[in-house]
Length: 70
Ligand code: SF4
Image 1 (cartoon, rainbow, N blue to C red):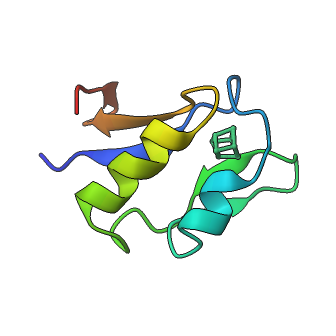
Image 2 (image 1 turned 30 degrees about the horizontal axis):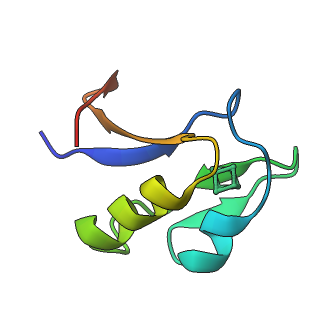
């Protein structure tokens, strides 16, 4: 199963950092929170960097609907 990134909307602070860093993967939803709209548009390393840089750790890997380790 392929791991995909997701944004925990309860944790997301809406800073927009991930949407600027990887606009091909993340975008701001109308509620002012980030969302993943194209999880396959960047390589794992680039997504991993966004996860690390998110100030509240809201971007996480999911595997088959469950939270996964990197
Ligand atoms: S970097 Fe983190 S807090 Fe900022 S918009 Fe993205 S998911 Fe939300």
